[in-house]
Amino acid sequence: MPAAEDHRRNGLLGATGADVLTATNGPIRIGLIGAGAAGRLHASAIAAVPGLALVGVADMRAERAADLAGRFDARGAGIDELLDADDVDAVFIAAPTAVHLPIARRAIGSGKHVFVEKPVAEHPDEIRALERVAREAGVVIIPGHNYLHQPECARLVRHVHDGMIGRTRSLHISYAIRHDEELAGHYGGVLREVMVHHAYIALATLGRPDRVHGGVSTTGWSRLDSDDQAWMVWEYDDGTLAMLYGTFAVDDLGPDPGTFSVKALGTTGTTSYSWRSATTIDPDGPFTFGMPLYVETYEHQARAFRDVLRGEAEPASTLDDAAVVAEVIDAVSMNATTTRGIRPPTDREDQT
Image 1 (cartoon, rainbow, N blue to C red):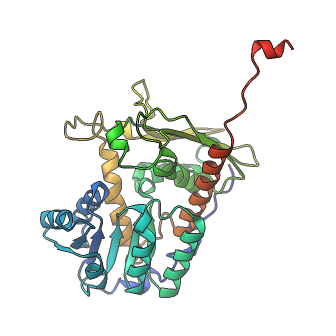
Image 2: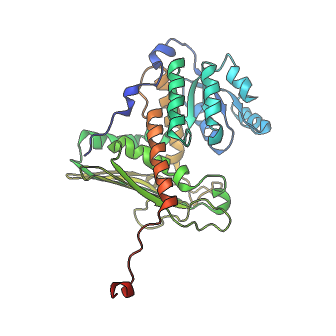
């Protein structure tokens, strides 16, 4: 197995939680920015975690912020109002990616600790600049790499690092969840919207790759021009491979489905986990069935953020990780626009 880099050595990219909030007697007071689908999941998660308190919600649509805030006995507020509030210790940024950076910088300038959804930003230089700002201000900033906080995912990473499966030779990550075109229109393409998850899991499990191959398929949408399928192969000098695939085009309805699954194959064993280990009938949900393990990642993530701020844990993922992920996604995106693979010769060409 390639030696996985310890991306947590940078600590909190600022002051440690022990320096910051362990002396507080009350809950850590959270302001949530963004009241859309992700914001609603974060609000529920914050409310479910002891030691956190949702005190305010802001959104570009004031009525949406007020509605979500009212469900949790919080107040609706403007973004600047929330960032300047004395009763807010930290902010969760679940707004569109395009506004992550200015809101995060504004929050840091107000002395707030920051959780920022993935992708933090599209370009690695922007992410590293934000990390420097946070470090200089002495505040905590953590990316929304929520799948890593799932205990089943953390167990898989630990199995690989501990050598339980011998020398790891391959890692397989699949996301196959059909989105209708209307739902997909609320997101970006699969490469930048979904494969971020694959990338930070591969990074935590195996470390930075030595070479990356990847691309996107011709889209099957009738109106959207975003990619609906993407793939990457991470290659390591010792021969280890990570094979990563994501699609909005189809569900995996076969046996042992790759709805979302992670599997590591080693010389003496295998370790894996899958969202399909728990499913529900969910007639009000956007997909064919409900996936509780996905929803649970938000609560595990909120709990981890609390523990980091208290100085009781190191972050599972950092802005350095987010910057590496952005580098990889950028490289694959560039490859997808400049090459279309090698077309094998036809029988006729073979005979000439």
